[in-house]
Amino acid sequence: MLRRTFLSLTAVSVLAMTPAFAQDKDIVDTAIAAGNFTTLVAAVQAAGLEETLRGAGPFTVFAPTDEAFAALPAGTVEALLADPAKLASILTYHVVGGKVMSTDLTEGMTAATVNGADITITLEGGAKVNGANIIAADIAATNGVIHVLDAVILPPM
Image (cartoon, rainbow, N blue to C red):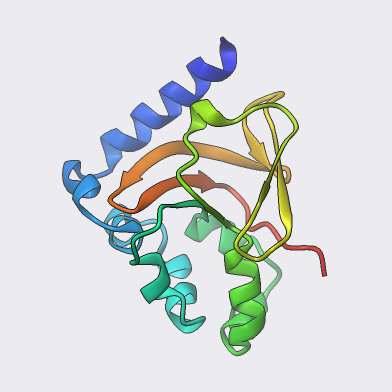
């Protein structure tokens, strides 16, 4: 019950900040309209993934905010932007095929990412993906859904 209440309140608060027309946009345009994913969008473009994330999907994107990228060690974002293959590997680790809504998440759930590696969902103390907090959930796009993360998650190397 607590989990559903938290996720519902989180979704409502983010949807209140997201333009009403977001559901008429694909994942990329929804992220652009939200205004707090400029680094993510730039990274998606640099990695050559924009066309894919504008495609039919559906996709579930666990999207780190600009603040999440800013929390990485100095020079990390710049280094990743200069290495499109490594950047694509990290970004596709944030994407799951299909539309996974917050109500579909269960404790200890694992999901295969587009990267090929699994992520783990935990719910104790709030919904998390590999320890990164889901700070907003269920932002609808025409080709999937975005869940907002407070950290960048890294695939096993």
